[in-house]
Length: 462
Ligand code: BES
Ligand code: MN
Ligand code: MN
Image (cartoon, rainbow, N blue to C red):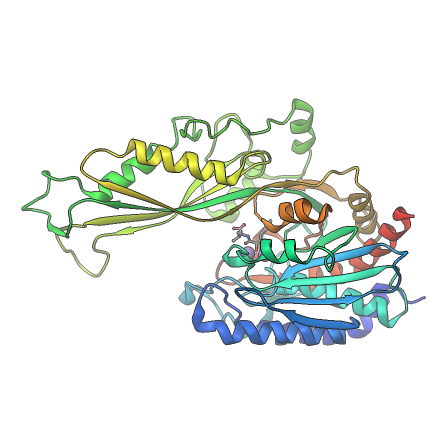
């Protein structure tokens, strides 16, 4: 019987070519100027599902962009894998920092990707990783090795908070019924250190607006006599962390699950080189919450970060002005058991409370989601672990990630199934940044590994 590796050796160039074509369509969900491109991408994915062996593939309407749904059901007696991914991408800005245009994919080698990497927006997050699943299913169907049923649900609003997905999942429970959910939308430690993501952080994203005087004022005539919204906003933001970099919002940590010393010791075994980490980012020191390591700070601990801040004059030269308003966008990454709606409320109450007289405050919640942890004693995790052992020749390291995929906890609530996060990207692949890329080795390794997951999961289910 042909192995996935042998099949890839024959179809390698076509697999790369097909992904490149998909990456050329600028499916930026955040910007309505790209709405036709987002729709075209959905249709391209639908076609690709049919070509990859699905019996049916359709676009299911939502209030926003459609969900591409496809399936190949071979027997009700066999388990069903539901693959989730997203066909939308982040905006490419800032454009001038790209070495080649974001929607004209090119292959270049890098230190970490000696076999070449495809540079394009969405290469890793998530078109490339999503497409691995289509090609894995193509291999299994064309070589008569699909061991179970498979369903695909590929959405187009992940990068803008999946606002319409909760209703969709609740209304389509039967259609989406499955035994395990499989997602490749995370990363792994290194090409020679395979890892499986066992946790995601939750998220609360808010915007704040501070209003002072009813109009912009001359900073000489009024300066010193009225509250300057930008001064106030920055002071309020600075007060949200204490001297140990703990978040100073009352109640913020109440539901945080502290890991035991054993769990922390287990985590510390994952290979990590602090010097290399600092060098890669050009920083002379890391920074964060006291008494936690870098890997703990960015995975098992909650955070609060300003993502954007603006107000006043930012054009060329100088303008002496006190702005009427100042704004900031803030993300809070949450850990299991923190409830994102509760945290949003705590933030709002606290932020309103600490505002001095002389300004008015508005807190506008955007989106959010709950964190997630995959139990490593679940057969889904075990099947994935064996799959990596087969293709990497090493046992993968379980690793909690700091990123968020809010739909995962929703799947558990609505569909009662666990999610396995088999990511093949590297943290250095620059997702959401200029020059995003995805290693060709990683792309092909994913296609090679995924079919083993299906095989082992089906075996372990019996
Ligand atoms: N694929 C990422 C999430 C991710 C990346 C998790 C790497 C773990 C490792 C996803 O597309 C994403 O960007 N999620 C957003 C949240 C969303 C609600 C906009 C995030 O994490 O910022
Ligand atoms: Mn993603
Ligand atoms: Mn993303």
